[in-house]
Image: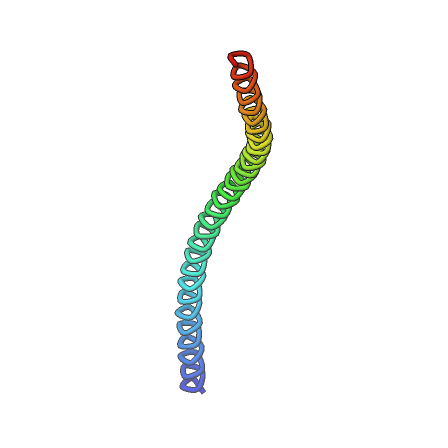
Length: 112
């Protein structure tokens, strides 16, 4: 009977030791998992920072695109005004040329 109790006690001690070892291993795994979660949080923060930088760059590019579009529109308007002015200048030059011819004819008639 004592041998049976000693055997059962030894079995219980072995199980307790095995449970203690498993518990220590679980604590180690939890520590590793916590460390990995910390690394994941750091990586996520870096990703968020990069996303914010990208969003800021996109906004800046959008503003620049609007500014370029406005400048192109201004250039189109200036070009239209210049084209109209050039056309008016050409018409005025043609009138001056015609008046010059008329003046030459009048001078020729006056001399004759």
